Image 1 (cartoon, rainbow, N blue to C red):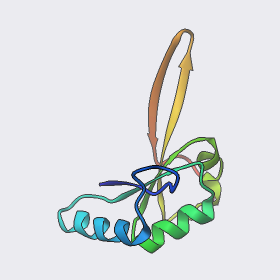
Image 2 (cartoon, rainbow, N blue to C red; image 1 turned 180 degrees about the vertical axis):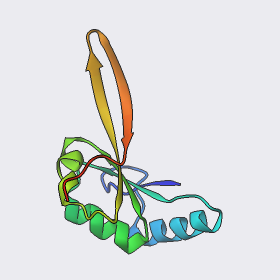
Image 3 (tube, rainbow, N blue to C red; image 1 turned 90 degrees about the vertical axis):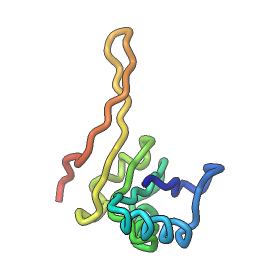
Length: 100
């Protein structure tokens, strides 16, 4: 159950709404995921903790750039754009290597 936590998005949810969605998701054996775009590590960590979310999905260079500053108990999924020759694809990498 992914929730847009990036406050600039039209469909962004508050920490309180995210907490309610996360609790409902877990009652139905779904994993709640907070979705962030170009946020810093402190914001990602604080908002996930406030909402009871253990997985953060990162988009944008800013969010991926702070990967090593996110506590290791918070799972991270990052969306990476991949360009090869004339082909542009998208790859998703779960559990990115972090230096901790």
